[in-house]
Image (tube, rainbow, N blue to C red; front, top):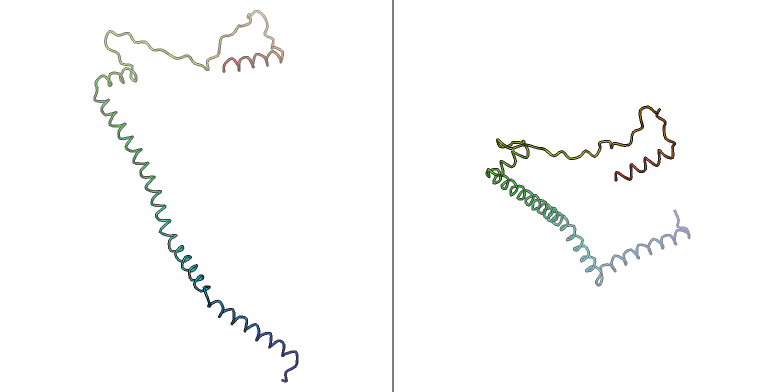
Length: 154
């Protein structure tokens, strides 16, 4: 097939595009560009290689902190239990526990118990005489008495 005049510019364009690519590749390997690209590649590779060990180090450091905290808690509990063992070896302490928890008394002692007041127990109020019929208070007096009870108990 014979070449037409329209084929000639497209082949020139292709040749020019190939020329630009070749010059770009050749130009990329001239001067300091390859060194800079290589340096970035080495830095990226180093960062990727250090991520795993760094994460392991951080995890291990956190585990050490948790174990140190657990060690302090266990040491405090051991000290508390050792003090309890010493207290239970003391006859005076055992007598005190028996009196407080079991209500034991020595012969000849008079036992008594103080009962704290019950806060939920209803208060004694003025009662209406039984001979008069009971009538509910108006709503505004009921509201006023309710507010006085709420504010008086707090």
